[in-house]
Image 1: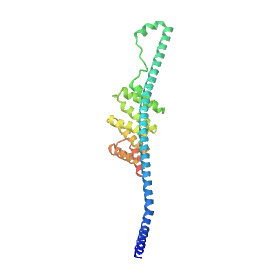
Image 2: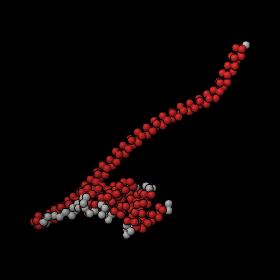
Image 3: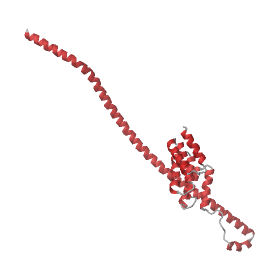
Image 4: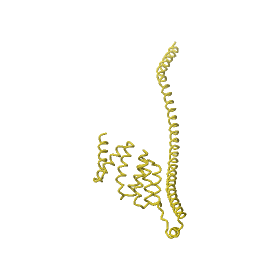
Length: 250
């Protein structure tokens, strides 16, 4: 009888212990499942992150390749533009020679005079003519040809007084094409490479306008305030003030 009593008591204690452990078991199982799900999500995120990094590297490589190709195209366009100027010059020379030959045929007595007098070319390629060709392309809104012509000018005549102007107009061409980052790069060249040029302050103003176009208003405002402070006699200071007011009232 005593043994049965003890056995019953032990059985009751065991049932009570199991009853206490069950809630813990019920809670632990969902926790374990949640941990497994979180671990799976972490692995998925890592895999996606690695894939994004790989795509970013590939995109950067493609972008670099495209920029390189664009530079090559610009150089080729510059060469083509220069060849067009040379062809135009040769055509003018040929026309002049044809006129002389026609005169000689009609009046052979002029032959002695023409042999002693050298013919002066009227369309010889000069720095000024090449520069004006670039400006005309800009006026005609043929910005790509203008860029290539001015690039050729800077390459052929880097010490010419018009080199800084040519560099400035390259920036203006890119600004007109809404390629603001490239425009800033070229306007910066004016400031850095030609610090004594009268185009420096114009280039700085255009940099500010490019920043506005890129919605980088804080940088644009800083640039405009520097111009206002450093160049109080600038002829376009009214534009600088207008843009400052506009940005301060945003």
